[in-house]
Length: 372
Image (cartoon, rainbow, N blue to C red):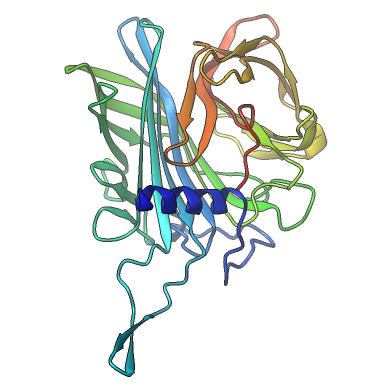
C-alpha cells in the first residue's frame, strides 16, 4: 500500500509540473546530433519514443502503438545518512528513484472492432527499466525498443506482450526515408512562450515486418509505421489542457505531422507541424498556418469523455479530413502515466473523400486536463 501511495504521489507531482533541479531548458536552434540523439536525455524532464502504424495480412488490417516514456522525478539521489552510534556515515542509496519509465502498447483489431492495450511502469535501474543514452535502447521488464545501426538491416526492433490483453508484437522497422526534423532543425515550439519547446524528430514510412499474436494465434504481418522521439522540460503552457495531433504516412510517400495545443474552451492556444513530399525537403508550419476543426464526436462509455473522431485539418499543403477507423480507441493509463487519452488508427482523406494516407490521431485532455 505504501508503495502504491508513493507512486501515486510521485505521478501527481510530475503531472502538476514539479520543478526539476538542474534541468536546462531547450533554447536556440535544434542542433540535433546523431547517433547520440537517438538515445535518452536524462537532463530533460519528459521524453518519449512513440511508434504507431498499421499492419496487414491479406485484406485484414490492424493498428498498433508501442510507446516508451522516460520521466525525471526531481529526486537528485543525494546520499542518505545512516547513523552508527554517534557517528553518521553518508552513503548513496541504490534505490533512489531518479527517473521513472512507462510503456504503453495497443493493438486495434478493425475486423473484431476491438482495442487491446496494456501498460508498464517501473523506476529505472537494476536491469528492470533502462534507457540507453548512446542510442535507442529502452527496456521495461520484458518490453523493449532497440535501434540497430548495423548494415544491412539498420532499423528498430520492438517486442511487447500482454497476457492479460491477449496480444504480443514482435516487429522490425526499417527506415525508407531520411529523418524528418520537426520545427526549426529539430526544435519544436509548443506554446506562446519561448521556453515552451521540445526537441523533436520523426521517422515516417518505416517498413514493418512483424509477427502479431492474438489469443495465442500468431500471424505474419507487414505494414508501415511512424516513429516520434521527443524530449522537453516545458512542454505545455499552463493554459493548455491537452493537444490534438496527427502523424500521417501518405500513399504517395509524403509525410504530414500537425498538432494544436488546446485551451479548456476548445480553442487553439498554439499550433504547428510539418510536411515533406517524397524525396523533398521538409517545411515547418507557423502557428497561424494550421487549423484543426472538429467534426463528429464519439462519447466514451467508460470515461464519458467526448472525443472528436473526425477532423478537418487545414495546412498550406492542403485541406484534409482525418477519420478514425474505430471509434473506441481510448486508453486508460491511470495506473502508469495517470491519464486517459484517445490514440487510434485513422485515415487521411482529400477534399473528394478519397483515402490518401493512413496514420494515427492522438487526443489528450478530454477526460481531464493534462499536466506535464
